[in-house]
Image (cartoon, rainbow, N blue to C red; front, side, top):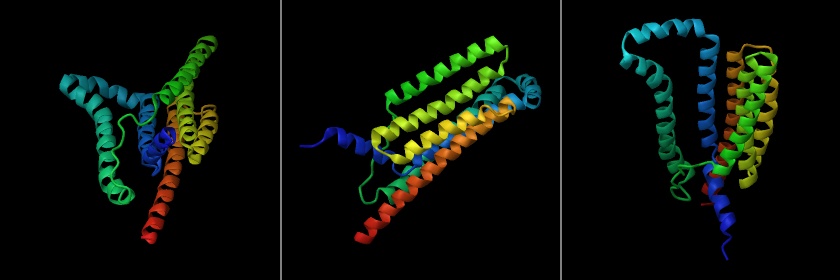
Length: 225
């Protein structure tokens, strides 16, 4: 009799086995970190540019404030992953097992909802602390802490569901590092950049481990053939 649950687990694990998804998430964290740093710490530089861009017309404003900072990273992430699937996964990682079409909804909904719920709880605590202490930075730091918590929960739950040990290690390091960084006496923008950069580093290390493991497995299969 076929164990359906085990089959589903192995299918989902295969999609994360090579670490490509971790590199993709790390890319987005770097983008968000840079945006956070620019918004909070570089306000005089870009704030003075807003009126000048708006004076050029709505079309230019849309390009500068929406297309360039948002659409380009979205397209780079989407088509970059498609290129990797075609050039790397299909020709190297999947050459022995056949092509596996990536799922559109990669992370299970319960993992996303659970992480978002706890992150919102941290945000609410930050709002209450900001109101009580009359310090706006509590709110900003709570957003960063919630983001780190979300990444930690997502990796931990995925690791438990799929039996991938490196995800559990990444979850622990993400939680510990975020807790340390959000308490550092630095500006809000730099704090955001440091949190996102740290989380991206954790994910890239985890992804690199997955990529090396997958490469070793493929080499073993090639030697067997």
